[in-house]
Length: 281
Ligand SMILES: [Zn+2]
Ligand SMILES: [Zn+2]
Image (cartoon, rainbow, N blue to C red; front, side, top):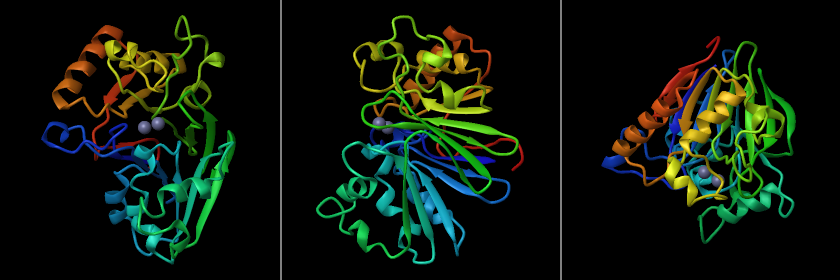
């Protein structure tokens, strides 16, 4: 599979000269299988540019949302295939106990927040609520599991015939844990990340910042590396950077965290536009 990072930023799009290198667009990742199945993970502002690169005509595209915080859906109204009557768009997202998925998405895709109501989109839109467990999309087997973050939020594990990817962009596995990490079975997110070839994971805070942000749903860089070590991943991509972390600060924080943790696997900071190949592409 081929994995492309279209948005690497967390919480709020942060365009500007100070963030140009790591990227200012919010969470969006494209996964393209060797047999042509295309998945899009989250619809942050990075999805707009991705939408302009997709082949036409496009019969089907599957969009997997981890949750409905604005930084993960804000690009949705600007995703070109939604306006193409020939393209079947499938949106997968965690089930909520209070509102169904259509009602949740309509809160954003309706006036006054957005001029075009969801119901007026021309193409066939298929909505799927996930509540943990497995499903198949084309050549991929997808596993979802609820993870520690405010509101219903899942992480995804995507397996092809010869490669595995885990995507957990918003995650606080250390919340409420005295001695993080506990063993795998008791650690949030472990089931989707265990043993994967590539883990794309929340890396929002520095170690010091985390202490004043406990319960906000994110990880320190040190917690991210500890979690990846516990899950025995082969490669970690640091993702979902805090909007206040400019390129220079990220360089420094990432270098310090890697030096202090000496991880036994490859660690790559996410950079907008980066492509990674896993197994057959
Ligand atoms: Zn987020
Ligand atoms: Zn979030």
